[in-house]
Each structure stands twice: as C-alpha cells, then as structure tokens.
Length: 296
Image (tube, rainbow, N blue to C red; front, side):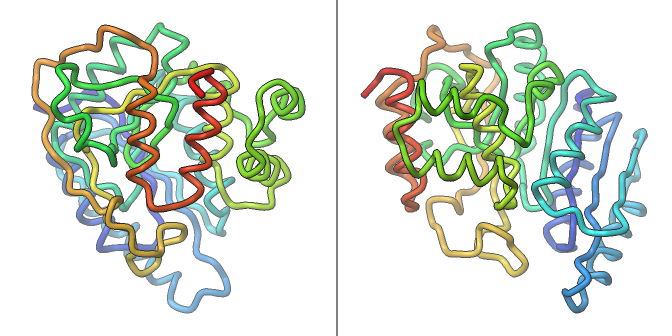
C-alpha cells in the first residue's frame, strides 16, 4: 500500500546505492518526497560527475503520483551542516516523517512500521526517535512485542517528529552542566565536546546528546528493518571498514504490531546492543548510557 508518510531522502555521490534505495521508495510510493543532495567537493576528482548522475536518477526516476521537493547544493556542506540543515528544512514543512540516506535499503515493512508509530507517539514528548536498524536482533526477534525502547538512537533508516527535532542544536547547549551532572565517560565527553566545537563532521553525536539530555526514548524494532549497503563500500565516509555485525540483511516486520508493556529500556538488551558491536566506541557508549540511567 502507498505510504502517506513524507520521506526525506539524503543523497550525495553514490549512484548504485541511490538507485537501489530509490527503488524501495518507489515501491512504497510516498505522496510527498523531499530530496537533499550535497554538492561535490572541489578536491575530489570525478565527484562532480557522480553527483550529477545521482541527481539524474532522482529527476528521472519518480514515476508515481508524488509531490517532490529538491534541495540541491552547489557547494559541499559536509555531513554535519548538510544533514542538519536538510532535516531542519524537512521538518519546517512536515510535522513528522522518515529519513533515509542513500545507502539505507529498507524492507518494505519499514514504511508501515514507521507510519503506525509516528502516529501513535506523535503527542508523546518523551519518545523522540524511531531507529529501524537492529544489530542485536538475535536477542530480540523472539520478543512478543514488535519493538523495544532504548537509549540508542540508530540512524540507519529512522523517523521522528518536528517537536523532537526542534530541540536539536549542533552547539550542544548545556553541555557543561550535563557533564557535571551526568558525565563519567571521558570518551563520550570528548566526542560531545568535538561536536560542540565543530571539529568532527558528525550531526549524529549532537542528536544523540539531544535525546540523552532531554531523557528521551528511542524505538528499536525487534528485527532489523534496514540493510546498510554502504558498510565497507567505496565512497563511504564513516563505515569504511569491514563490520559483519553491521552488514545485516533487512527482515520483514509482522503485523499487526504488538506494543511493549513497559517503556523503560531493558538493561540486558542494552548490553546485547553493546556486545554485537565490534567497535570500542559502542562499548564505551553503552557503559555511559547504563551509568546515566542508573543501571550500572
């Protein structure tokens, strides 16, 4: 069935990944599609041609009844400023919606999953993020409930609300107070400080901080709904190494959805999210999260 939920599609310089993800969007047939395309980097040979090819796929690949708005940059803004500005542009026009990057290949059940939960929690200020990747599905797929609440804001295919994004700021307001009151993990403090200073290229750390700082909740489906086709692929910015735990195929969600009986993150499951990652930063991140919510 066509989805009535608006979608923001973030593209850049990867025609192959863009084509595959656009085909999934075409099958979902959203009535409103927003596309943000960052500009080429002046020092990257051949990137201008790749960016042009990606935009051509968008301009000629939408063959269903759909209102399309594009925001194509002439110069490169980078991930940090570019994605932040693109999501802000999206939520200026829509009260809620889905955000997909060019390397996020969702199962078709991803779209009705997001649609139902966006509507269910639209007036619940504590629920701030629906993250549809799950790297610990071996431990969650047998759950009765269709999803769990977590402190992890997974951004490989996700959805949110304007009311939540309005709290987002790249300069991490209140970080010094947050550090004094809650921060024990030097690693995460360093990352948050780098984000505040603009010395890293991440918008996701600022979003993660925003959710933690407002004691928000994130939703994680019991099965992985989005495959990341950019892990280890040519042209990847951050996921350049081999990470088998991250290279999970998308599965289908069963309907009707079964809603969880409790809203509090399960510390055992948070530990599983921790152990399924091969990167030290996630182990440190989990330790910090558990300490912050009083589970360690």
